[in-house]
Amino acid sequence: MENLELQKKANEIRKGIITAVHSAKAGHPGGSLSAADVFTYLYYEEMNVDPKNPKMENRDRFVLSKGHTAPGLYSTLANKGYFPVDDLKTLRKLGSYLQGHPDMKHIPGVDMSSGSLGQGISAAVGMALGAKMDGKDFRVYTLLGDGELQEGQVWEAAMFAGHRKLDNLVVIVDNNGLQIDGKVDDVCSPYPIDKKFESFNFHVINANAHDFDDIRRAFKEARETKGMPTAIVVHSVKGKGVSFMENKAAWHGTAPNDEQFAVAMADLERIGEELCQK
Image (cartoon, rainbow, N blue to C red; front, side, top):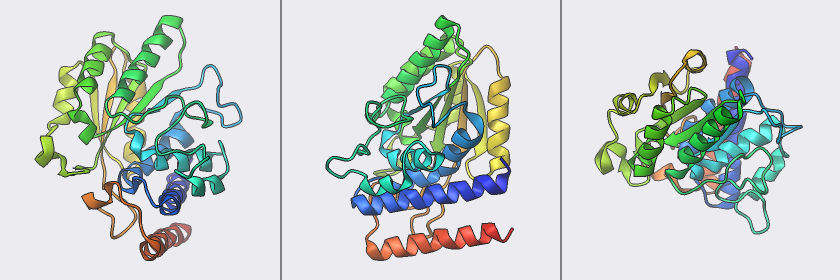
């Protein structure tokens, strides 16, 4: 898919995120928006998946380790055709299958239930090891937040993956620099992220989370890396695409009110119009 088409898809996914969180009056828009371009690239370009056959045996697997950014994953899955886009408006509502964290038992396309920070990467490492043991050639991708790196379980999983040379595993770190309590380097600095993963025997790639050429380069390099797992540290803007949310920690877990929703959607409509004129 051409970059322009990917940009248009990502913008639609951002609209879905804002619509879902506004409708729920709860949720996590900031980190969903910062990861929207990565979600887009994974599902429209990188991964071998089929919305018509979500349990396809040899599909690539994705684990959302930062499970609170479920609105980003849900909007991507809906736009990809796993379930109706209109269902995004049921986010977190009583009886909805789209709850606050991903549920593999009820949501088509979700390979692992997640939510407790640090646990998703462990599940992804297990999937990657299982593929190796069974002689399967599918790949496993997992998305972590930079604040999530403060969890010790992340590094236990990384140590195991590096030791086992799981070159079918790609760990993606959404490095937007902010977590619920403020700047990650003020709360408990995970830096230098790249050097830490290198010390656990990962091949590490830094990339711009909002540049599809750079994202493509990073995932191509990951595919070509043999004998060790890959960590892609994507440098992103929290709240990307919505003017008043960008680089604001307060939008980590806050839903826009009606007035803010209108401004956010106007921002994204404007971006969409500019893309259509290219």
